[in-house]
Image (spheres, rainbow, N blue to C red):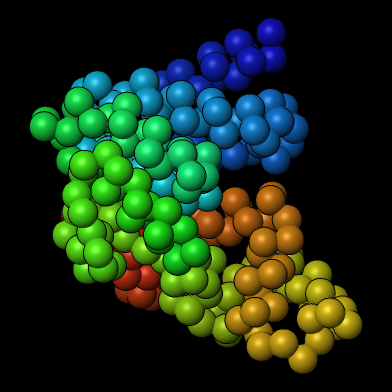
Length: 234
């Protein structure tokens, strides 16, 4: 019953709105984190048959970030038939590339991953005969981009320490961040490392700031290169 009501509520929503709704469900426990991830993937896969481009990303936060960046550029990915598919982790890349392979002649494939998963994506592209990339430049020629070291680090660099702290303050999170900084395990670490861990320490916070940090970066005309280049590709 709850799942049916949620599906009805999502009817007619834009792609970014559906992504935010699924993220909220994951955080609030309505469907459970894994169930929300599965639903987000299913919602995206339902649109790939008519897509002109499909972007494979590791999780919902990457999907939210890319869709937010696209909105900031004035783009409507739904209207453009560009579909962003969260695959539930980098190790699923072969399965998704295999599934989408038969459609590859009439649509553009692209993707985004973290640095630690770069080799997983590279091997997947080779195994499924999408390409044989030996370097990151080769991967980019195929439309696949790498965040260094991950999306959160890219966004923290783009917005800057002062900018991230101002954003925390605007969201009522600065006091919690200051308390986190004083914890023995994190006292004395660089602000960037502290911010990264603070964001990653809560799924609720991480997904919420995926959107907020992208909006802040776009407002500074400082969208991280992997996001910017990927959107240009598709």
